[in-house]
Length: 348
Image (cartoon, rainbow, N blue to C red):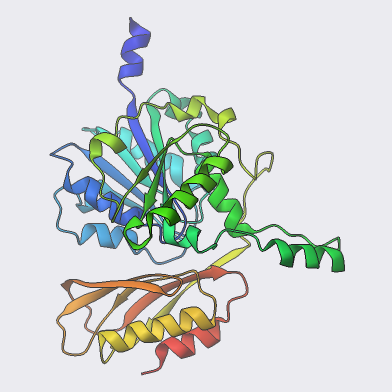
């Protein structure tokens, strides 16, 4: 009976993963809006020095999004900093006088979930927490557009010219690892695709994942919390069924990607800003741009979220920064022209 009680006392943890811009924070906001008073702690991890997603959650006005319920880890990736960042954070949460009833971790879009799952085998964590489920959010339009697919003809030509070349696709590897770790795969943003396009993505996922995983379609990450929480997977005990492109590696470095923050002046108009962001993203092959900006004549702060050349924006909270300077996080594959991007974004 004692062992059963111990198992029941474990705090369930849900890991939300998915590539840059898949909609993880939006899904989390929707989840929190329907929490019905349940004590949920949120751990947000970002690739870069400026935390945007945690700020988005704090400004959403939903009960349960207070500072004490949201822990933000920036300038790193949990799959690389388990011992330094993740374990102390989790210990602090479970040692609270009133521990959370559920913990949700939103990983960086570049995170590999498996090293994070392995961390739940640490003795003082394993006895007090269990991974209720790994939810992988898919940017369905990006997959349909071939963002994560190799160009077979180009690879063949490169291999013929120089057989020693490394043909790894870092975007595809991260995407595959996130799919393989999943207990639930959510195809997000399906409202902008046809049924045939969605079906093609579903077929590709079914062929890529070596085990049967439930797949759901969603718009704006709107799913019932009863579907997302309470999966009961115990994923930390099922690692062998979740293969990774990086199995066997001692650690995982994100040398394939880089991130930096650009400060931009107050903008003349929303439309002008968005057009500029689209142009810069296309010219410099940027994966992700997100952050906050000030617009002339507007008292509210403009929140901007971009994936490739697709951008969304909304005025969220009153702008309190007296300088009215905006800050944007830029993420892309290593080799971005930081000076060129900064100059283009800072133009009036």
